[in-house]
Length: 366
Image (spheres, rainbow, N blue to C red):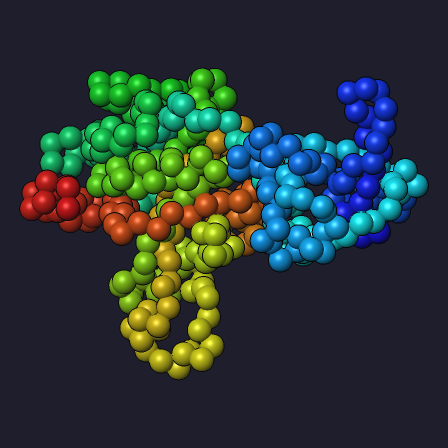
């Protein structure tokens, strides 16, 4: 007997007697050979749409199945049998049908993420900065930088509330005028650790970690990252690299993804290496491959965030100085949402004039 065989097994009937009934071997468990089988019934009216499967005379594997009439494969009727209790093999279904049944059963049994109802947008903010001390409170077009970020976040439809997380009283005093503030410890090594402290004491299903130095952050990007959490534990955003100056800039983090849009790796190096185009100009390489620039916007399911910050700093994280690698090294999948708009951050005092000019000409919406 093998997987995909149609066998006869003794099943109890309404009169208390056991009678031979057909079943399909879904899995054979080693080393003892116990069989996981699903029942086959001629009572077609019991069909559970999208779960059970009909095998009819028109199907090419009906003749090899050994069944006498059109039947219903009942994935909801599972049983485990020892080979010695079976009554013999009468036929087999096609490998394609067998794989389809297993995939459907696996999908049904897979853990379902809990529904996300309350999403917090948390902005970690520090006063200290090597290149720009007091940056969160620096005025841009008449408002503190943080206020611009908060106002853009409130345009996102997915966020239930926006919170500034800080350990600095000066930032807290100003931010309370336009936003909820949560005070945190001063010894957090990263923004993720800071927002995790807030998430641990605030009721929520998910958290979006929003950079506090991006006064032009795209609300649609926030919504896209939040939406990705419906099917994964962690999410982030990326955009196509257009500027040749960013191609080999180690401050521009690159990301490569698989066919499902999950991150394979993040690096400060240019990835992937186009071996056959390595001698070409940067512009030609950018045209030949969709290099992705990682944007510093993260979404976490609450329980994932709280688990992540308890892991020790990982070797790749230490090497690249990229905390998202801690998630990958510990088996946490990261969905990467590709967006059209790049981020415009304020890293130095010189960036302020550039952002103010942008706000003046576009009002921050284009």
